[in-house]
Image 1 (cartoon, rainbow, N blue to C red):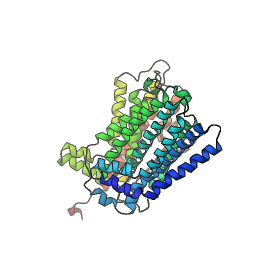
Image 2 (image 1 turned 45 degrees about the vertical axis):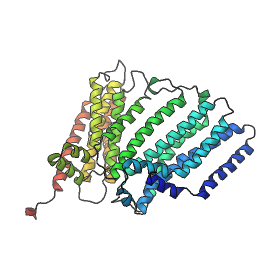
Image 3 (image 1 turned 180 degrees about the vertical axis):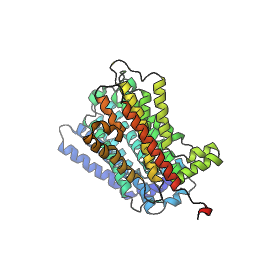
Image 4 (image 1 turned 120 degrees about the vertical axis):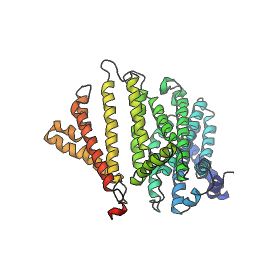
Length: 453
């Protein structure tokens, strides 16, 4: 048996806890039947489906994040990182072991829900919804653990894991509205409602199950690579590229099939731009990181360069490639009255705007300071993107675009097909200024030579 899974089972499971869970659930079932004698089967299904969400999705998510935070707090994480386990063995051992007791209660709730759904006509529809819930819960756990591992820095991690627990709680709370929307009508009008994902026309329960299976596969991929990073197993970032494209492809499937909507390439580009910001603010992008990149570029095989390269340039380059492919395939031409030409220009502006923001982040990241650059970067972006343009706009609305190029969107609001020349000139000026500041900061913080002392 996997040693990590066995260790977590020993921590989570005991004879007393095994006996308490079915006893408490039995009392809840008796209470539900006593309060709803007119329709006990339907009410039991809804009640125990909600209990499954609370136990497996809610409590299990907290346990997933705590399995990492507790290791850091108790100072045993470094010992685990040096173990002989592979990243995959460590990943699934923690993923399933830390949530074993939550899943024990959750599976009991699923069993009661299935039994209560047996007498009703839409049994198979409800069964698929329950399967969808279980797959979605495992996917949520995988993404939570992958996110926690990706943002974990043992050198600066505080002893308290409260931040990680709150992070997990926020993600679970974001999931709750969708879950309770399903529980509101588990029959999904007789299970005949059709989904529009990629125009397959599948019943909504089956479509939801398929989409969540894909998200589970991507979550397990992210968990495996994040665990490999923590265990110092070097690898080229192919998993990151696959994950970005996979998420973009899943999201693109929900776009309307009409020609006026964004194409697959544009959706992939949007997904890549979002992950660019995610990688920028969650990874270390200081001077030491880029010095390692330059060193491997000059003295190491290409593989070592890719291993040392931060992830945000990959996402940004992937967005640029997708926009070029969007233009080359002719899907950006649109028809008369189509919003596509304006959307194309806006996406290219967003690509350059993202590059500018990354430059501002590195201007602060390259300084000699132990403080992380994320906070001051966000403040600077707020001042540059909201406060300063707002002040300029009150004096001269035409000059606001020079303070913030995205103010050129007012031309789109007026029915024009482009952002306007001033917006593009302003964006070019911003890039030149930011590039100059980054080069100056890099030179100013360069290590002194012995002869300079």
